[in-house]
Length: 309
Ligand code: BG6
Image (cartoon, rainbow, N blue to C red; front, top):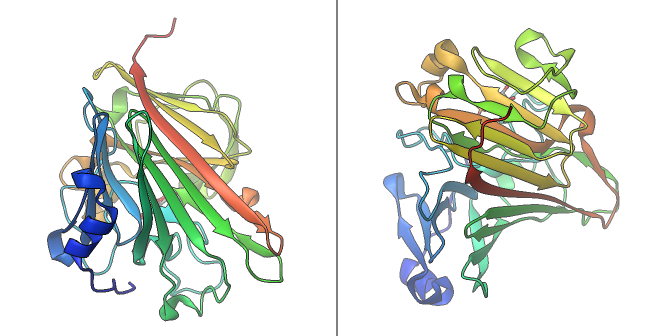
């Protein structure tokens, strides 16, 4: 894991604090955190990993799930919105390359903050280039993340190819959504889509109806552009997952046995989360021409649950 630069919290609060709307502070294990509070929502971001950890719009339960266990041994936080980049899953050739790339374990910095006219707060983050990741990715490709905290949570992950060669890469916003009981939810928006089932050797299947989760689930839906709706009847809530610049949706829940082996989900944690990840992965991997830029945009919002007939 890359080392975070020494942070002068007083200076950061003066420079980017927007009069107290944004507060920089040291979290558990010395991890730099950014707390965002405005009239619409509350959020928390870790500068280690550029990882949004919490987002709770007014009048709602938390929308993003975060493990009660703080990370150990240089791992990213379990939960929130890990940034997977510039590869997804294991590295293609390097066995020591970290799963889902190095962005989620590298330090990021804030470059700007702003109050938006309707009351939301926007933050701009940039990945700090580390020398120890050069052997996996020696390319000049600035990576930025724009986060807007309001009644909606919007995130834009932008990769810029500043080299003079085409580059192939994957990206994902690996979002853990909080749910009442994963066995009760339905995920709409993927019906008739094709998915690669990673629990069955990557075999291809066609999705029939909404996705339900009653066992380990690890599916990569390819060529999907539509919004997903996570219907949660017990909490009477529907989470809308809208996206642009993403051709892949990943649905993941480790289920009981794998969760127990992972050790950082907390007791019964797997029942209260589901990952619906907006990505460009596997057969939807991106190729960026020299000078080209790509943005992956997501928007999350809560609606009232209405049973479908
Ligand atoms: C999902 C993958 O995106 O992330 C799964 O499809 C993987 O295969 C999961 O297990 C969690 O990955 P990690 O590295 O955060 O434990």
